[in-house]
Image (tube, rainbow, N blue to C red; front, side, top):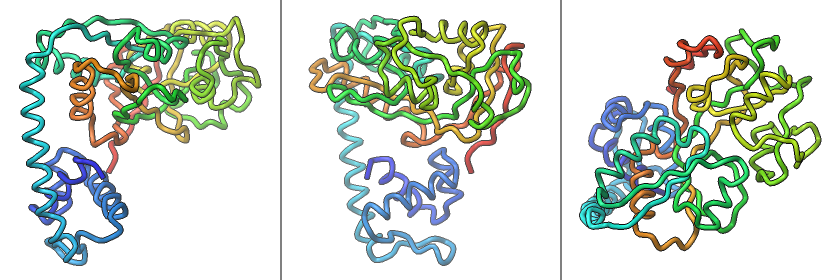
Length: 319
């Protein structure tokens, strides 16, 4: 159970209609329905009677609603208090960014943090495939914006949202001008290999657990740009999040949506036990700005059409 679910339940009780409530909280009707169903599963009881319109509260829902409202009021008061404290924060916050970071949310998050904690000095560090986690573990950065997955017990990951994944293929590839493809279409291709100090879990995920049967090639890639070169000129393939397809350009590369690849999850990474109060402020703001409580977001394709090196794929929004 999380705060957004409580908020969604309170708004649904107010409107008595999934469509109008979804509009009020700025998410799709299907996403709202899924979040309410998830909340009911967690509570092991039904909160809403959906058998008629307007939707009404069950007995359990009537007990739940006033307590949910109280919790939301307490959280609101806490946010105001934290926001007030944030304006007194001083010092530095080192932000590591790998690749496209958290996509379009990155600029919104950082500008929002500047407004929230104007006295905190921000330093930015470009991370590579090899140091995106070690930089957090070794306190070279305070927070990192990256994409999962990782196995790193010393690091806490705050999931922000998920987005579709794309195949990264050469412009001469047989599927280069297709609107979409499946993992089976890459069955005969060789994926890029990664340098030995790239986290293995992460490398295998982005190579669809293939890695050509090898891992830790000393001549493997360690950056996004190296990967694009390897695809364009080395006749290999890779995958990327939708935001990566928008942020990175290469004349020899096409990005084509993968219909059956698991979504890519953007996250904020922080070292467990971090004591810098600006870190907490940054994480709380990231959670507040993240769309639909970490749900899957739609593709944002308009810029892709401006680049002849990218195949444009239009994806309908969820719901």
